Length: 69
Image: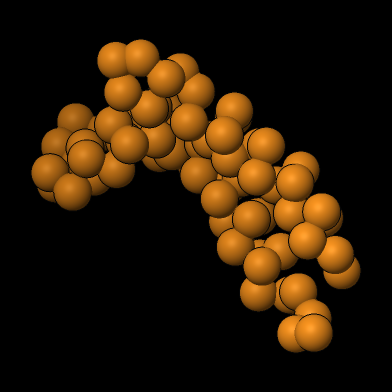
């Protein structure tokens, strides 16, 4: 696997993973909410967290499975 194979997962992280960007990245807001005890989080909020977090999981997976050369 070449380093350019990481371009697509990185693009997903920068767009889907962080959108919407203002006033703060959506995923960051969910992480802060969970750190605060996740009070009031409904099922749709957990699903939203999983959807916005999945590009980062995919990116980490691709990095781990890169051959060491």
